[in-house]
Amino acid sequence: MCQHQPPCPTAESADRESARLLAHHPEQGWSLLCNGVLLFEDTGELLPNGQIIAPHRPLDASRVATAA
Image (tube, rainbow, N blue to C red; front, side):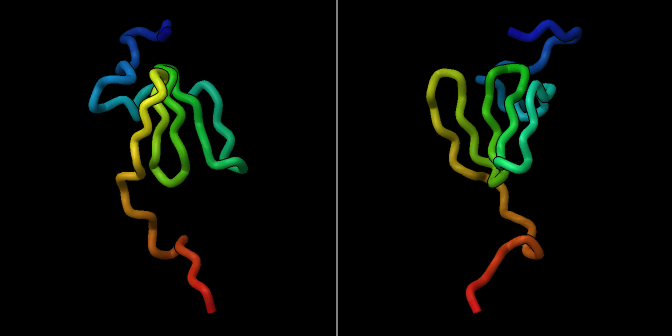
């Protein structure tokens, strides 16, 4: 899938999030990486094979909304 040199990490690699962006839609909360991974704003991921990776990094406390 990747045409970059050196090639981007594969979707199965531990460093898959370091692949280059193909599409970035912050208003919708997702980005498509060169390796086919959909990366979501909450750090969740959807791999090309359909595997779901749960969010794995804590959100910045200043961005978390709380009910009044």
